[in-house]
Amino acid sequence: LTIVTKIGARRGADGSWIPAFSREELTEAVHDNLRNLGLDVLDVVNLRIMFDVHGPAEGSIEAPLTVLADLQRQGLVRHVGLSNATSKQITEGRGITEIVCVQNQYNLAHRADDALIDDLARDGIAYVPFFPLGGFSPLQSSTLSDVAARLNATPMQVALAWLLRRAENILLIPGTSSLGHLRENLAAAGLALPDEALEQLDGVAGSAA
Image (cartoon, rainbow, N blue to C red; front, side):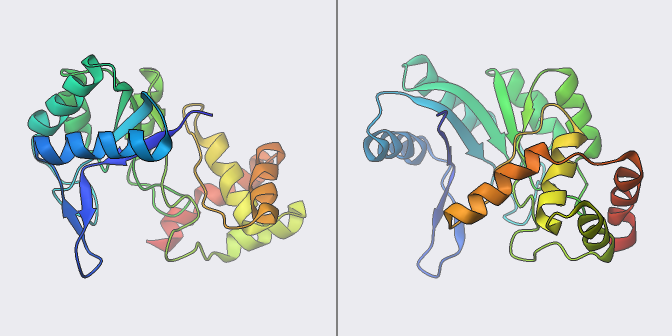
């Protein structure tokens, strides 16, 4: 297993997300992860960028990322990633330390990062789409349902298979709460999508706009 953790935010008393970007907060978060996971070093730590909790927003990440890079040099973190990041922030981050992955929202209907995915693929950086199945608003599309019915698969399997076909650098993190659902998700890796189906699915984002 390669365990990836994420730091840079904390929960408020009302359940809201609050930035936790100070040196003390970031350092404490890394040590909390090490202790809770029973590890001497974390494989990958993503810095969650919190200029806007609803999506990527511009702002310098030099200060918090420098803290994480320091912890990496101390041997507490092997690799560093970014979450909720813009292209400009990724470029800035790569000037501070190697960035091995980017975790942003992306799925069949939410495709703002199309160009970014291709840029990262050329540079060998993994792209990890969160909410691959829509998150709190599960993907709803008659096209998706029709393709799934023709392939004798579930709509969610088709949505995951489309992501795997989208680019070689995409790594999937679909949530699951049961062994049966986990098996269903894993089966998506073996689902072949015909060119006609891919063309239909590629149009979902436009029809949802």
